[in-house]
Length: 194
Image 1 (cartoon, rainbow, N blue to C red):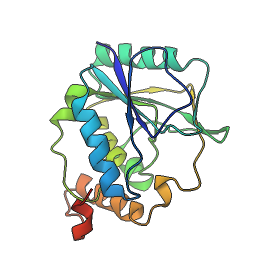
Image 2 (image 1 turned 45 degrees about the horizontal axis):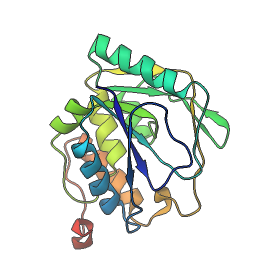
Image 3 (image 1 turned 135 degrees about the vertical axis):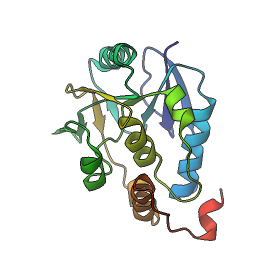
Image 4 (image 1 turned 90 degrees about the horizontal axis):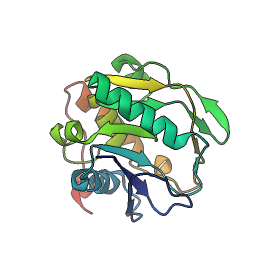
């Protein structure tokens, strides 16, 4: 069935396999981005989904082979996610073996180029409000099993106005970590507006 790539904004690259779902840049609010990614994920019809950031990011040689290895390993093991190390501006970022404790300490350790089983994504009881999609998604799915490929095939180039710098991103990440621990989030009325 293949893979759908959910991309924030426009991209200068095209994966050779799978479909690409491009999300228009939303208002610079974490809650709006969370809902947009949730919509894109829920509309995917493929077996797997993979989030990419777009912009200046680069897919390195071996990207498709890494995605294929992870999908095969996920089919074989039943794992809900498959991730790899990545580069940030050309420097290696080793993600390491997933644990919920590591995820709570480093909530953005799994960032982009993470393959998720679509059926498992759709089964999550997603919270409403100001949350960080990746933290909720990856923290939930990794508990169901993961595949880790140590080959870095994605180079993230943070943009000057990127989502990580938005005023409510820190609260979205904090709410996500609280949700993963069974605690309520902290919300304001504008968190539910698009």
